[in-house]
Figure 1 (cartoon, rainbow, N blue to C red):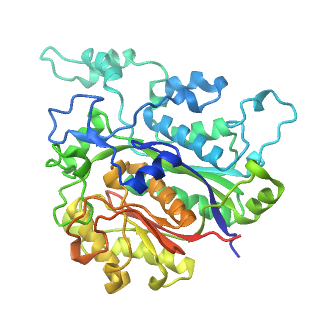
Figure 2 (figure 1 turned 90 degrees about the vertical axis):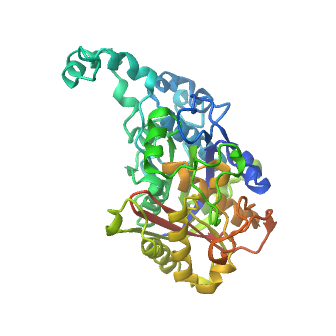
Length: 454
């Protein structure tokens, strides 16, 4: 039989803060990080708002011996590295990255044998920083001032630093995390838009279940709040263009007046462990060193949506792909639709995506979809793309651990009567929580988390 797997460390990073404490406080209070963008001038774009990270320095989250390597980290990589540090610390893990003296201790003993530690991190298309490209591009123009590919190859590219490409490869998120924490087990990178983080968590789940590792770093991170990446999102037509005057109220998941999403910075890494090996280390620990398990991962499912009339550039309006992933997760968890107590949806606030999700939920839960609480994180932290699912899993796990449903905001008239209307956080009896991601392009992933009992 497959081994049971638990979540023991949470490392969210987003506009509401770094780590689980500020993140959970924002979720309980319904406090949004969405504001006018100030890292670049957004006035030339139809959307002026996003959920920005603030007061962040990667140097606070890497060992001193590794700080030189931060020069070749794009912000996406920095967020993943910081999130991994927060998650490992939260899980009371001793690794080469959490123990500053590890590299000079001859008798150093990490929590887990490095060969039994895996790493699976979701990433996106990392946009190059404009200030790095400017000089190179300016040298690659023809006499009319137009970009010339031949001049780019002969002259322009020479103005880039020799290690320039290392900052922008998607696999570098997992690469740096594995080096810092000496993770030598199975590792992979998944690039499937908003489904990336949850698919990566599913990959780690399978690796541990089949006995190829005892512990894994998993999740995702992304930064699309820079001019190049932001422009690409403008072209998709998914960003809100009506919320500039009310940033905190701009994203309205499952509301009849929903008008689009906003870009968020960040993501999350979570620590998955075999329940068996976690129990052993928990028994051996005492006092402040005793780790906790937030939740058990009961089921996982993945699917691909296909909407031929729109060439898959829009979701299937019936939500069939989303429903397939959810049903697969429920089958593995061996539960029925009646047993789900809370749903953390994709919930972006993009009308056609919200409608597809609503259709999927009604196809599975019937009229009970009007009763199960639905709480989206996107009005609070924005859409963090490859990192979005990681944040949702953190909130789902914390909700189960605390037996509290986070606040729901910005939904006054729910679609089809879904139980997504704005309300304050509240205590509830939670046994199973469903969370899922629906990526732009059709990839879907769903997880069922179960309340942990010793």
